[in-house]
Length: 304
Image (tube, rainbow, N blue to C red):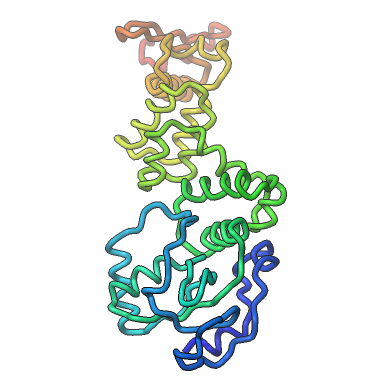
């Protein structure tokens, strides 16, 4: 089943992984009693002989998705072999493919096709992280944690990491910055309540309470990424610019008052100053440059 596929290089694994994994030519599957000391190629291995991957970057596995994959495996079989390393005779450890491994158990399989690799602990960590980043549907937070582990545990620099995963340094850094967000927002990323774009906008707010305030507004009002970026821009504007808006520290309220001020300015065709305090008291100022300009404003107000 898998012999025809193993003669091809797996181009999607990335430049770094390709340097670590040197594919060996596929061999015909030997009889079970002959599979004693396999060191490379594809073999069918008993599921009971495979240990899970201690370096697995995926934290959560969706049960419904696993059951769907298991049903597909019952019908189609395993299309892509898992990757393992050999620990001892009839003892292996997953490098990648834990979803296929778990789904095969659910599907009731006894054996599974597997690539066999030789790797030490650090090589295994790097292979597992890179292959999962590139092949699995990890959420943004899991990718961020994987990048951080590659930097710290594999002693890589950001430039090297970018080469390994095929991403530029800016992209890598954007993911790493997610780990600076408070736990509630990180959980929101993990559970896909907010997108990577929302999270990147929130990162630019230094105050944690303000981050959480806008995060909660995203959830309750289903704000788009663009609206959140505008909200953050207003929040981070210099204090002098705030003199024409709300005299309040609430970023959400400040954003809403700024929108009203912009509508008034558009309506009257001139800059409008709008101020409001915490008790909803304030003032609106509409400047004019001449008598004609004043009359124009009065006409808009239907006072003349």
